[in-house]
Image 1 (cartoon, helix red, strand yellow):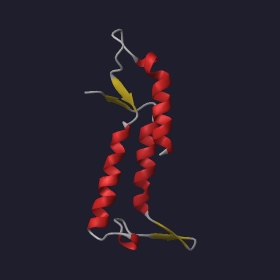
Image 2: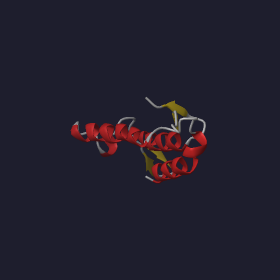
Image 3: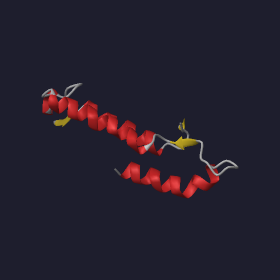
Image 4: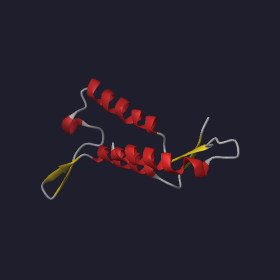
Length: 92
C-alpha cells in the first residue's frame, strides 16, 4: 500500500517533467497501481484451492525458529517494481 501511495505521489510531482510537447506522459515510471491486482487474484486463487497457511505455494521455510513464506517475496518484488524510477513501461 505504501509503495502505491509513494508511486502516485512521485507521479503527481514529476508528470510535468516527463510530459512531451503535447503535455502527455508517454510511459509509466514503475509498474502502474492496477498491476497489484495480479497479487490479489493469485491470493484469491490460493484461497479458493485451499492453499492457505503452510500449504501456500513454495511452502514454509523455518529460519531461527521463525516461519517464513517465500511466496511473500511477491509483495516485495511488486512494491519495488512500483517505486522503481528506472523501470519504464509505455502507456498504451
